[in-house]
Every structure is written in structure tokens, then in C-alpha cells.
Length: 256
Image 1 (cartoon, rainbow, N blue to C red):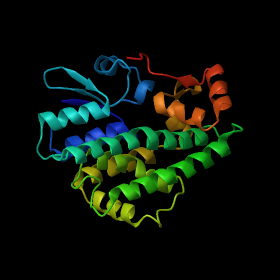
Image 2 (image 1 turned 135 degrees about the vertical axis):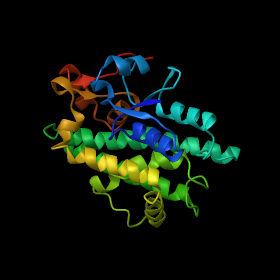
Image 3 (image 1 turned 135 degrees about the horizontal axis):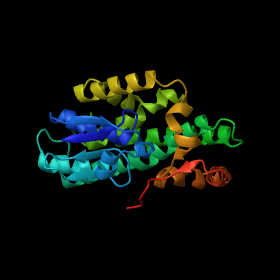
């Protein structure tokens, strides 16, 4: 298998950790979101987004949730999906919370960092930090008394660790979240998660400033779905409109 991935993409990280946890063999191919419209990535995913997976027989899959579901169906052991129907549904709820809400809020924070000269930057940063703290409290409650979100390690945990780790960079303390802190310690003891953290640290060490990580060709930033919904919902519509009219927004090449 070939996996189109990128070390700082939470979606690609989730899939790569699932592959590693299951002990599956694959070839990682680095591609930077839709900033990198190479023919091989476009062939695997018309949206030119990571992750995308090429199977051994040449068939392709895109979208992290779909890929993880496929991996569970095709390679059920070791499992990353609860057997209990309710816990399985909770897994998908928590994964969705992380993939949509947590991702959108943290992305909003980094957008504010990349556009520090914008008049809305400080307010965007404050709003994203406040909302992310609320989301972390939700995850604290979702853990309950368990070691993991759905009993044993699942896709929900892999999705969450990709975003929870942003708390430190955003200046959010976890002092009032003992369950989440203990969960982080358990997660970072898992070899697949350790490998992810190592790749992330290596990638971030090469980043001189956030603009070089967020901003693509001609100063444009990649936007889509919930990442665009968040600033509009929080009242930063003027910022969005100004970015759009200045040609500073970039979208996937196809909507399908």
C-alpha cells in the first residue's frame, strides 16, 4: 500500500497511526495538502488532499474516516473499533468532534497566527483558545473513568491525540483536566503514537514560522468545510471576505 501523508495533517496522522498500530506494511509519500497538486496525489484523490491510500491492487481510498473504516474491515486484528454497538457509535461521535470541531478551532488559531497583521487576528486567537478549552473539557468528560474513550484504544483516541496535543502550543493549561492528562500519558506510551510524535517534532523543527507552514503559493491559505464555517460562525466574516477578494484563499480543485 502507498499512503499519501503529511506530518502535520491530523487526518493523515490518524491514518498512519492506525496502520502502524495494526503492523501493516505501507510506503509513505509526503504531499502537502492541496498545495501539492502532483499527478500521483490527484490520481488517488481528486481533491488533492491527504490522506489518500492506494491499495496493493491499485484501487484508491480517500478521507481519513473512510480509510480507517476500511482498515478495520480488511484488517480487523488488532482492533481499533469497539465490538459493542453503542461504544462503536460513541467512537464515531468523538472522532467527528475531533475531526470537525477541534480541527476547525485549532485551524482558526493558526490562521490568526499566520495573519497577525489582520485587525481581527487578536480576537480570532482569543476566540479559538476559549472554544478549544471548552472542547477539551468535553473530552475530559467523555473519558469518564475509562482508560480510553470507548473502553479500549480506538480510532476515537487516535483522532483526539492529534488535536489535544495542540493545547500546549495554544497556551491552554490542562491542570483542571486530570483524566485528559492521564489519558495523554497512556497514549504517549503506545509505540504507534510515539512514532507519530517523533515525525511531528521532526517536521516542526524545520518550520521557521507559522506562515511558512500555513501559507501556500502566492500567499494563499487552504480552506474547506468546517475550517471555513468556524470564522463565519464566530463573526469574522469581514476577515473571510477580505481574504477571498484578495485572492488569498485556496480550495480543493474538485468538490467531489
